[in-house]
Every structure is written in structure tokens, then in C-alpha cells.
Length: 74
Image (cartoon, rainbow, N blue to C red):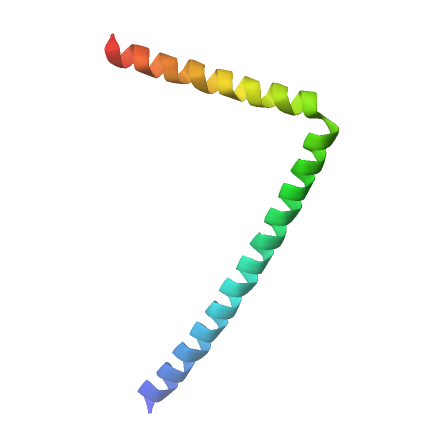
């Protein structure tokens, strides 16, 4: 009898966990679409700033990689 109750509780918890996983996936998809939409809109409104940000990040990454490569060779 105790095994049956434990098994039923386990199935109930598994069902709830699966429903929670689906809800979280839905929320994540909605958040992603809002972020992508906002970013796209901002980029279209501010193309110069977007290019400057990308160039700055590329420069910083290149600088960091150069430091790492220089240290490994030296």
C-alpha cells in the first residue's frame, strides 16, 4: 500500500515538473523574442552606435587574445 501511494505521489510530482518545464520554456521563448525585437529596433534606430559597439568589442577581444598568445609564446 505504501509503495502505491509513493508511486502515485511520484507520478503526480513528475506531471507537475513536466508542466513547469513547459511553462519555463514558454516564458524563455517569449523573453527571447522580446529581447531580439527590441535589439533589432534599437539597431535600426542607432546604426552608428551599433557599429561602434561591435567594433569596440572586436577590438577588446582581439587585444585579449593577443595578450594570451603573447604570454604563451614568451
